[in-house]
Length: 446
Image 1 (cartoon, rainbow, N blue to C red):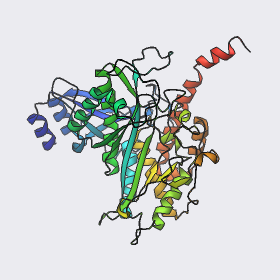
Image 2: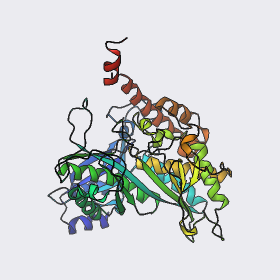
Image 3: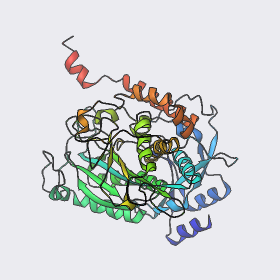
Image 4: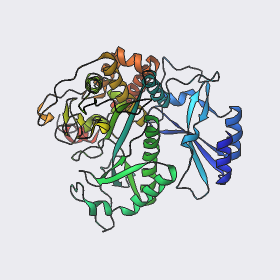
């Protein structure tokens, strides 16, 4: 705690936000004066109820078979590596991401950050380390205060909204240059290592790529980045949304994850052999993604809206075929040198929890490697002509997740059970809502 205390004093920080990513990737936690934070973290009195991990995306609490019904407190343990200033406050305010432990010091095993740390340890136990680089897509939309009304594109610097696709358009991105200047400035302050910005295929849809790094750092950065973009957009009078499918006739937003595995000691990329060809380990990793990703969908497509994105010919995969330089496949292998050999998982949505997305994709690949699985041949041509092989709806995904003994063993039985309970509760709540489509087509016709 001494290093954190010195850091806070040097920057004259008056308040600190203690952040805990919940199951949906929402920032939970508490805000307290800097001096009280230092005392609380030192004497382990910085606490929250364990039930923060039983909340749905709407903030409701589920009755869980695995969570303690008395809602005991858990202790927050600040990760000094995540400490940064919060760019959008006038007073010097800091933020820090926390791990969660019980009073006996044991980690809270259902915490999404801990689930990812457990997978990282599994890799380390075999002398491996994962390397990942996310790509996050999102839409800028005009402020929408009535959820019954459809979204509309925001007004740019020209005074006009976009009216069609402007893929890779430089001038289209520049329409919102003030927002992105704030985003890059805020990322620099927080140590978020973003790389390129491009305009995607949707109206006012953009993508930010991250530079590759270790899985936990990348999950932390993606978690903070989503919050940063939303804050920056609101300062300019618009919304930024990471919904998987905010518009019915536009492409959805993804969280593509590039991943490779290196030797923990030497740093050598294990996805290529000494001649620079695909290694057997690489092919087994791909086979693991093919076999287990459909069952891991509640982690990477966590909301009812997530499945609207997975539509044929709409820049999203419909199966887990793999191909070289093939963006129609769920798993794309980019052309690269041997030291950069990697696979891109194109299935996850931007609405997913970054910790769970990265944990899921690494877990699936891990199972493929340890089991020595073999992939299908790489697909040639469009993968859209092939069978739809991903779950189409949340209940299908939950059924597959529930039945995967291998994922339960790898991710933790209690975590899998709790995530299913939360997602089932969310789906049940969604089923209570009567949609505009139903009123339009059924009200007077049936």
